[in-house]
Amino acid sequence: MKTKRENSSQLRNIDYYAFMIKGLMSFILLLVVINPLQAAKYKTVIIDPGHGGKDQGARWGGVNEKDLNMKVAKKLEALLKAKHVPVVMTRRSDVYLTLGQRAAVANRYKNAIFVSIHFNAHRITSVQGVETFYASAAGKKIASKIQSRIAKYTKTRNRGIKNGMGYAVLNQTICPAVLVECGFISNSYERSRCNQGWYQALAAKGIYEGIFPSL
Image (spheres, helix red, strand yellow):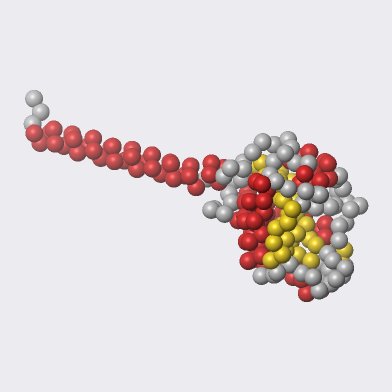
């Protein structure tokens, strides 16, 4: 027959192991909650560096839009991969893709979000700022979050979000999609900023946090 002291010791051991198991379960739950793949609604991010190849996009002051698009896209990819978020790039080099081909890439994935990256231009060279386009209700919510953050980080004019139903890469995608115009390279001041790595990094950060605002 066990003594009271033995029984008491055994109960303390049981309590200790129960406490440890509870703590371990809480830690596992925390990992699941903060893991972006578990917490986020969108499991794959499709990054579309606009233009490419024979389609250089806007060109002002020796700066090609297609090149800036790729630089921001790669910086955004790095941020997402650091959080173990699956990323698909519509292009990784200076190649030409049709708008339909870009949308088709996104449509191969479920629970995805499509982000097309661009830089803007206008015949009135004083125009500057960032703006984000959408074509669906889900896209509008994402566009709003991206727009507020990218304008905050780049410290340029916030031109707001706009309906982009006329853009094929938005209206031909099944998943929520946005098109981000990261600045006007037709404006000499803004072009000089857009052409800098630090500005491109801030634009990528704004897009990233707009997709995953809680991470």
